[in-house]
Image (cartoon, rainbow, N blue to C red; front, side, top):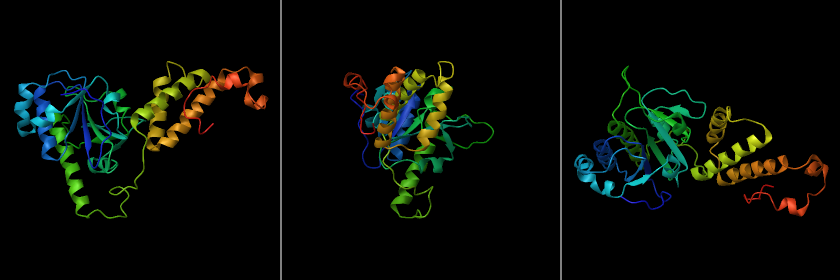
Length: 280
């Protein structure tokens, strides 16, 4: 185990993130399922268990994945280097921010690199705040009883991912199928997008667009809208520049607003944020 910074992924790698896993046996079983289907990047978020002998016993020949497992205190840190995260659930979830997909449809949204699968804890699954950090929700269909063991859930989804890679490798996915073969797009990394949301929230408060009581619902609405747009780095920079400019203008006296004065004083301009000014 180590705490080195999480690198951006390369090739067709896919990160598996376990949020607050409860038992070491499940962690070991997850590693075994991952190795069966060609996955190796495992991250634990605030685990409530140790990666101990029980984990290694259940991992069987996947002990090398446990040796390399990364542990982070927050989901945001676990998603460093990720551009598209898929949350998972065995039950329907009502969310304005995240679109729900069947397993194969969800996996088709993953980029060639920079993707992650996020699994919640065994006892209650992902919290709404954690699901907000994802851009898609993969729901595993079940009968009336929808309570899948964590390792079993990883096994099911990892198998579907592996099968999709195998089919793609054999060229059996039709080019014209927009779900099975979506157009590639360079998405901004999640840490950049999260900083954008922080800038937007700060700006909303400054202009009176929202308040502490309504902030969560407002942000969830905008997350859904903007995450569905799959923003690029340039687009994220544009929105951060807009938020910075609006915050700057909100603190100016009316007679010093750009529309009321041809040019703002140099000392005022210099106080603006250091966010990329390409779009100002």
